[in-house]
Image (cartoon, rainbow, N blue to C red; front, side, top):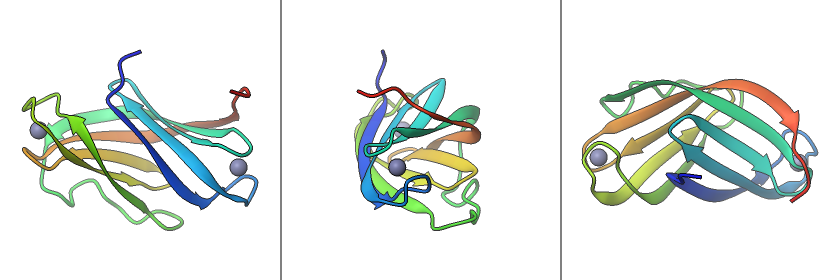
Length: 116
Ligand SMILES: [Zn+2]
Ligand SMILES: [Zn+2]
């Protein structure tokens, strides 16, 4: 599978309430957050890809936003640089710091993933 972003973020799981690694992956057609403890999975589907100002798609969610920085290769400018990842309960954005190209994903569904 094409891998655009993969990251981990340690946070209390919304499902099992344990503080656990939340495994974050994003590829062009889906973004996911999986709890390493209980495998609860949130899936986000792409809405738009565009060059945008930093704050355009970042809206307050229903709980704390997670903000991460991960190196990745931009699909727009091709530069391997830091991408800002912002995850809320409704939106998931990945933004290239080099050119501003932003992937916006919208929360789609929640399910229990398989072990492993
Ligand atoms: Zn969990
Ligand atoms: Zn870029």
